[in-house]
Image (cartoon, rainbow, N blue to C red; front, side, top):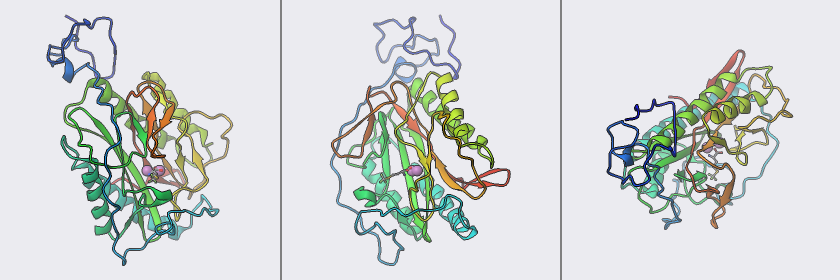
Length: 324
Ligand code: MF3
Ligand code: CO
Ligand code: CO
């Protein structure tokens, strides 16, 4: 018998795993669990489903400029924000965190991603906010739901979550003229060990990156912390999607890569507001885009996880605005 592996080590596939092992057989690792509940890697690859009609937002709710046209018009926005913007972002950030928790509480096998979208939509409106994704560059829903191999920007549809899936919910709320942006990856029922480890390491990557933020340091310390921890655990870091400046606009032109970029020597300054949102992969980190123009999936269709916070840089570190 092989000793049960510590939850810090993922050896998959293992040379010790008999090829003939069936899903319900005891796992080769000696944990006493069924193979399918332990080291068997679930596939459950996903396909586009059917989308419900676009939801509406009551007229009394303040809307971002793109809400009607679907076209965000970018204007230069100083990454160092005024005290007034920061004050409003603290409120929006907290609201985003609450909406994420409320929506995430509904995650369960059998629940469709469209049902999660409805819940997020209502939770934003309940707080007097507009769900920022809705019609942002034409995005048709109020929430991004990214299941299994979907890296980001999955569109909610009629697919019911399956036991063993992982799903990222990316919530952004526009409240009192500013955005708060946060996401987390949730486990659906009983999830295999490699996926659980992926989710855990991704959360740690975000925590380690946040711990690096302080005025006077170059922006590249953020990606360095993430890449180092991901790769030490055998995982990959997505390059094509980055963190971003945020404030009165959803995305400003400040880019925050999640990999080490030595040329990124710009210094972090007090009062800057931006997101960090690492996307970490079990396998390849390159992506394919579905025909819907939004859904980004890993090229090898292996799983990926993400966590995101919006933060403001303080005199000696940063405040996470999207923590309850
Ligand atoms: N919330 C995502 C981010 O973290 C952006 C989603 S854009 C959308 O930057 F249009 F897909 F909503
Ligand atoms: Co973001
Ligand atoms: Co987001």
